[in-house]
Image (tube, rainbow, N blue to C red; front, side, top):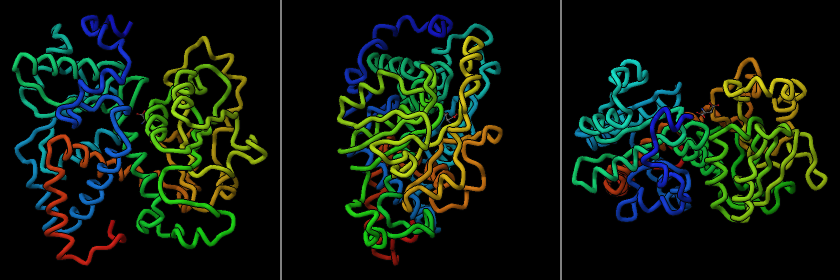
Length: 412
Ligand code: ASP
């Protein structure tokens, strides 16, 4: 139905292809042009993005560094076309643009655009591309960003103006830039070095001297990642699980009610298993896996809100039988988690449902506000990469910054 409303018919055949076939079309010379799917990122690109983000956040702290960043892209303009509610993604992209000197404009309500006069969504997008140098978009329509990337590619083929499309959340499908910031937060957490991410977190050596954590390694490989709550309807879960599956020897534990709309989708399960991920599905944080309660075995726990806005009256009866309190954390549960575990949440959290009550916010494992801030840095890194100034940042950082400042990890 959504496809008809938007008249995506001309892109149907291209949309129906496997993602791996589409990926080369979204690149130019081995670099990403459009960012539509989390599958476009490789472990190397993720490393590269994290390094750029680390440099940007250090540079942004000094007057000279900040000025250098501001002077990188003052000749570029970004359109934030967000027709589905958003706070963090919208604002952090806007802040990311501001860090790099990019000017932004926004359309958040299509009823204020010429679409009310019968203009097609694609004419609107093409018009934006005449005024702006990148279009960052969020839509309830899961494939719209993808189709806009095809539109831009077709324009390029005819030598018309064509700009990058960045998916800021597409329907129920994907949220690649959220996955980037989630990965970035985990990368930083499992370096076990950055004191500013949580001054009360123990360093690597202290953790290794604890017999409970024998064999602990730095990095994302070999870890146990938990996802709790609305797994079936959470696009952020799907995008992050995709990226984590790029790392060797990973285990994922999905904690969700046993209901086809809420639990892990069989397609995602298959994909993860095919990539060598060890997948467990349980119904509560207390359920045991190989004799250990799930909550005690996790290296990270990605909490999610129950997405009530997608409830269907037909499911009301089945949902009424579910004990949703099993998908809420408590301080007692948190105290049983590993000392170094990270609690993440894509936000917004639901204060009425209480999947993460505020009492947990000061626990050293709570990383969700750091995670939101990391979103601004990694989105700045993504934009720097898309506009090709990432190498300039590295050069400046190496020559001007590292040599003249007393640089250490604490400032990150
Ligand atoms: N902010 C996330 C998203 O856009 C998660 C959520 O809404 O619960 O998908």
